[in-house]
Structure formats: C-alpha cells, structure tokens
Image (cartoon, rainbow, N blue to C red; front, side, top):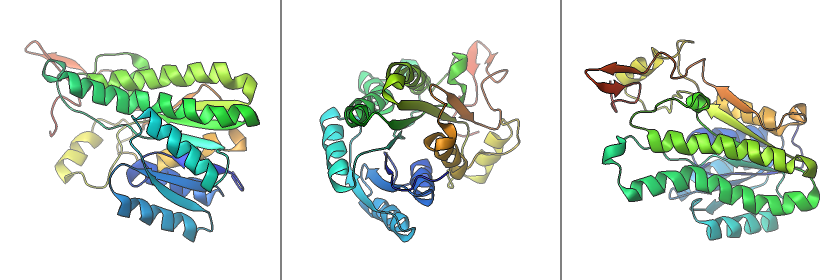
Length: 266
C-alpha cells in the first residue's frame, strides 16, 4: 500500500492513536506533518521516528478548534513539505459527565474540539485538493454512534462523533467529482497503555472479541483507506471495534440509565 511521494497531515499525532497513524503512513512512504497541542517534546519524538524511516517530517503546535490556526498550519505544512495528499482528522478529547452537570463551556469545548475541528481542517485542506483534483481525508469517529442510541455520561462526545460521520458522508458525496475521497474510521474500546488492570479487565469483558483494540489496528485501517487499494471507497464508516457497540449494554436500574460509561471506573 505504497504512499511514496505523498504528504500527510495527522492532527493530534504526538501520542496514542495519532502517533500510530503518523508512523503507519510514514512506513507506507508518506512524509508526515505532526501536530500537537502542548507536548512539543512528544511531537518531536514522533518527528524523529518518522525521519528514521527515511521520510520528511516536522511538528506544528495547533489548537484544531481554532479555524484561523488551522488555516495557518495547513499553509505552513504545504510550504514546508508540499501539497497535502492525505489529511487525518484525529483530534477529539473525551469528556465523562452527565448532561445535567455539563456546563455551557464544556458543551462548546467538546463540540468544537471533536466536530468543529474536523470541519475547519477539511475546509482548509479542500482548497488545494480541489485545485489538484485529488486527495484523501480520513476522520476519526466512535464505533457505536451509527446506532443513534442513548449515550449516558458521554452525550456531547457521542453527538459530536455522530456529526463527524454525517460530515464525512456529506463531504464524500460533494467532493467525489473532484477526485477527493472522504472516509471515517470509528474505534471501539482501545487500550491506551495506561489503564489500571481492573479497569482494563472491566472494559475487556464488554467487547465480544474479548480484548481491547490497539492503536496500531486503528492506524492499519487508516493506512488502507489512504491507499490506492481503497480507490473506490468513499463515504464509508469503518468500525474497528471487535464487534463492540451499545446494543444490549444500556439498561435501566432503579430508574437510572447506566452503561459502559456510567462511571469513570468499574
């Protein structure tokens, strides 16, 4: 799945899933622009790992929820590394709180960081992609949101991720004639490498496949969608979740709705 000569931008790529995606695209041949919010040292470590694979890379600090900052970084990346062929919208902070306790500022932060950030980056990247009549955009969703079910304690996050899927499919339809493919990868429960053993076991029990996913498995899905092997794939939402969703896992106990995210810890 060669991406030789292509340039990719992966937001939030200093750690976790974003880091794994950046390294996967680099292994497939792409130069990679790394963005980070605060941890420059971690971002530079990823840059070094990409360069060790023989690819070009650099790091940019970015608040992906700031449209002006997004425009500036896209312009800088294209000046430094070349026109963008691949854009991965990976930023999306998680929040755990009942709706009744969610402040207006918290609501806006979750919405703009998870959904607004995707819109801003896609809008900015599309300018060059349209001019070149080619490009690939991959967004990051959440495995169960296609069910449009209740999501206690993570409602703003789930609502925003549902919007990401709608945005993805809308862009795919609008930009197909311009040679631009737009797809979504929706992770399930992923091992972030720092879960307490009891919480990891509690989460694992809720996955039909019997284990948590790995960041490199999300990266593999992104690598496929970015490749020529997916040349006829656009508007897809690929769940990488071990068959996990919210079906039969939301219940009512003493009048209270509970599910996997009912508590921060089991």
